[in-house]
Image (cartoon, rainbow, N blue to C red; front, side, top):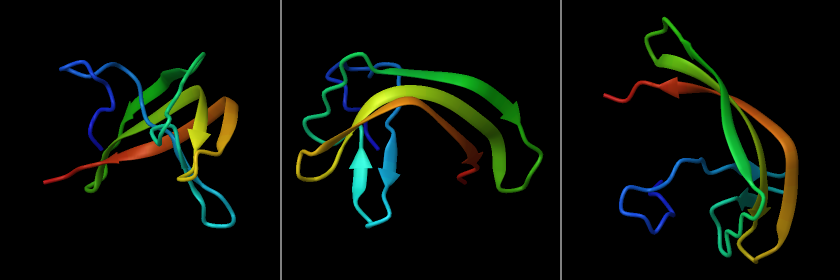
Length: 88
Protein backbone atom coordinates (compact mmCIF):
# COMPACT_ATOMS: atom_id res chain seq x y z
CA UNK A 1 0.00 0.00 0.00
CA UNK A 2 1.48 3.39 -0.89
CA UNK A 3 2.15 5.95 1.82
CA UNK A 4 -0.78 8.25 2.54
CA UNK A 5 1.65 10.98 3.57
CA UNK A 6 2.05 14.09 1.45
CA UNK A 7 5.75 14.13 2.42
CA UNK A 8 8.02 12.93 -0.39
CA UNK A 9 9.58 10.19 1.76
CA UNK A 10 6.44 9.37 3.77
CA UNK A 11 6.24 9.45 7.55
CA UNK A 12 6.67 6.83 10.26
CA UNK A 13 3.58 4.85 11.16
CA UNK A 14 1.38 2.09 9.95
CA UNK A 15 -2.03 1.43 8.47
CA UNK A 16 -4.37 -0.65 10.64
CA UNK A 17 -7.25 -2.56 9.10
CA UNK A 18 -9.97 -4.84 10.41
CA UNK A 19 -12.76 -6.92 8.85
CA UNK A 20 -15.77 -7.27 11.16
CA UNK A 21 -18.18 -10.22 11.48
CA UNK A 22 -20.41 -8.79 8.72
CA UNK A 23 -17.47 -8.64 6.32
CA UNK A 24 -17.15 -4.82 6.49
CA UNK A 25 -13.60 -3.59 5.83
CA UNK A 26 -12.39 -0.88 8.25
CA UNK A 27 -9.07 0.94 7.84
CA UNK A 28 -7.13 3.82 9.37
CA UNK A 29 -6.23 4.77 5.78
CA UNK A 30 -9.74 5.18 4.36
CA UNK A 31 -11.10 8.70 3.86
CA UNK A 32 -11.26 10.92 5.80
CA UNK A 33 -8.32 9.15 7.55
CA UNK A 34 -8.34 11.72 10.36
CA UNK A 35 -5.96 10.44 13.02
CA UNK A 36 -5.96 12.93 15.89
CA UNK A 37 -4.26 11.46 18.99
CA UNK A 38 -3.29 8.28 17.14
CA UNK A 39 -0.19 6.27 17.98
CA UNK A 40 1.63 3.26 16.51
CA UNK A 41 4.55 1.62 18.34
CA UNK A 42 6.44 -1.52 17.38
CA UNK A 43 7.07 -3.36 20.64
CA UNK A 44 8.69 -6.55 19.31
CA UNK A 45 10.72 -7.39 16.21
CA UNK A 46 12.03 -10.96 16.30
CA UNK A 47 13.97 -13.01 13.74
CA UNK A 48 12.41 -16.24 12.49
CA UNK A 49 14.13 -19.16 10.86
CA UNK A 50 11.34 -20.21 8.49
CA UNK A 51 11.50 -20.56 4.71
CA UNK A 52 8.48 -18.27 4.17
CA UNK A 53 8.77 -15.75 7.03
CA UNK A 54 11.76 -13.77 8.27
CA UNK A 55 10.40 -11.76 11.23
CA UNK A 56 7.59 -11.49 13.75
CA UNK A 57 6.49 -7.97 14.60
CA UNK A 58 4.23 -6.92 17.46
CA UNK A 59 2.72 -3.44 17.73
CA UNK A 60 0.47 -1.42 20.04
CA UNK A 61 -1.76 1.31 18.62
CA UNK A 62 -4.54 3.84 19.10
CA UNK A 63 -6.38 4.98 16.00
CA UNK A 64 -9.68 5.60 14.25
CA UNK A 65 -10.85 3.11 11.63
CA UNK A 66 -13.20 4.08 8.79
CA UNK A 67 -15.41 2.03 6.50
CA UNK A 68 -16.13 2.91 2.87
CA UNK A 69 -19.11 5.06 3.95
CA UNK A 70 -17.19 7.33 6.34
CA UNK A 71 -18.42 5.60 9.51
CA UNK A 72 -15.78 5.32 12.21
CA UNK A 73 -14.65 3.12 15.10
CA UNK A 74 -12.14 4.30 17.69
CA UNK A 75 -9.55 1.74 18.78
CA UNK A 76 -7.71 2.24 22.08
CA UNK A 77 -5.01 -0.05 23.42
CA UNK A 78 -5.04 -2.12 20.24
CA UNK A 79 -2.40 -4.77 19.76
CA UNK A 80 -1.37 -6.78 16.71
CA UNK A 81 1.18 -9.47 15.98
CA UNK A 82 2.15 -10.51 12.46
CA UNK A 83 4.76 -12.45 10.50
CA UNK A 84 6.74 -10.66 7.82
CA UNK A 85 6.82 -12.92 4.77
CA UNK A 86 9.70 -13.15 2.36
CA UNK A 87 8.84 -11.87 -1.10
CA UNK A 88 11.17 -12.95 -3.88
